[in-house]
Image 1 (cartoon, rainbow, N blue to C red):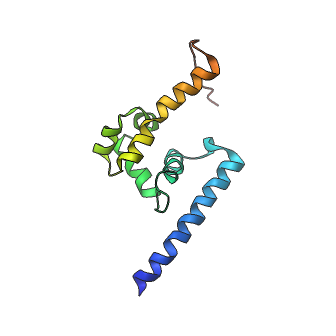
Image 2 (image 1 turned 180 degrees about the vertical axis):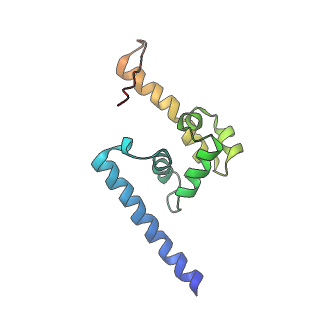
Length: 119
């Protein structure tokens, strides 16, 4: 009986947690999130009904806590290091190409230099 109750309340927790993340993004933007929360937010779109916090942390741990290492990895490498599905791994590995196409469409073929302000 206790297991049954847990199973019925878990989706509500996930739904409420996801809603809190969405509200934070609407209010403060994605940059206000920690790396695991950014990855968790991305995973919301691949894993619709499961808690993604542990999965996000496991993926980050497998890639030395670097988002760029995840996004630059081939989808087969993501699958080899983690327990995500092919669909999720392919989605994650597409981010660097999406970012590249975004930059190319915004700035053309000009070289792009980034600067970082440290406060």
